[in-house]
Image 1 (cartoon, rainbow, N blue to C red):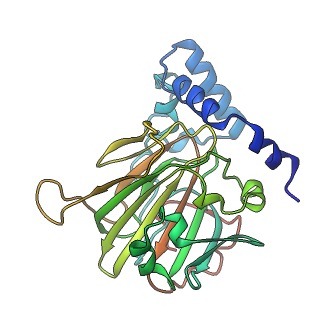
Image 2 (cartoon, rainbow, N blue to C red; image 1 turned 60 degrees about the vertical axis):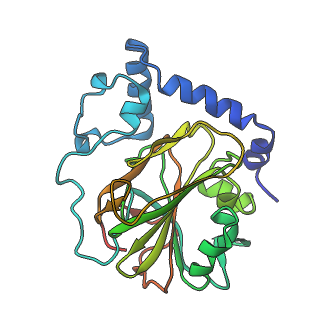
Amino acid sequence: MPSLAVLFQYLLPKRALTSLIGRCASSASGALTTAAIRWFAGRYGVNMAEAAEPDLARYATFNDFFTRALRDGVRPLAASERICPVDGAVSLCGAIEGGQIIQAKGHRYTVTALVGGDAAIASRFTDGSFATIYLSPRDYHRIHMPCAGRLVRMLHVPGALFSVNPTTARGVPGLFARNERVVCLFEGARGPFVMVLVGATIVGSMATVWHGTVNPPRPGVIRSWEYAAEGADAVHLAQGAEMGRFLLGSTVVMLFPTRVPFRPDWQPGHPVRMGEPM
């Protein structure tokens, strides 16, 4: 039986609330904005000593603060085939079995559903590996490349806007394949890999470095973009390079085509930092 907090989300006007918060977060309201940022930083224990701009009063909007850059050198990149792309906490990681991904105890969803119903993409990860990382409000919210790759395709998949915190993940079936999301397919040195940016309640938008803001708009249908291997439209990103960002927190799901030997301490709830080995 889902908790009352989860059941309440079914009744909550999530899209209207998200649109309202998104407009407020992008508004430059002077002292009011600074006060909101100070409250948020104190409430969630945000470590501003790591920020490139530690002065909270220097951020014109809440979104500027939330997507703040880090100081050079605070996230060194490990000498590893794959590195963690974000700051956050491990939700789950492990093997994809027969195209099924574990969301939480008692809940699974399919790779096909996650990637917006695209069977051709899903077929490449049927018996691969996945890693799901939750970004809390206090975390750094830029997303980086786990390994070098060339962008092949991006999809914006419409969906719900449930919270993606651990409690909701345990209570809402198919959560990550149900929420709005941006699916990015890359080709790397060891084959394809996918980065899925999962939206959530009050996540005003998601953006990538090659496209800018992906949502809004929210037209209610799947949108798709394909990218050339060479030429002016080609997108090649190095390991550790920024690939996107969340405006307010959410979750990243990664897919790899083969079994990945994740670190033994990558257990549910384990805190992770961008740049550390997987």
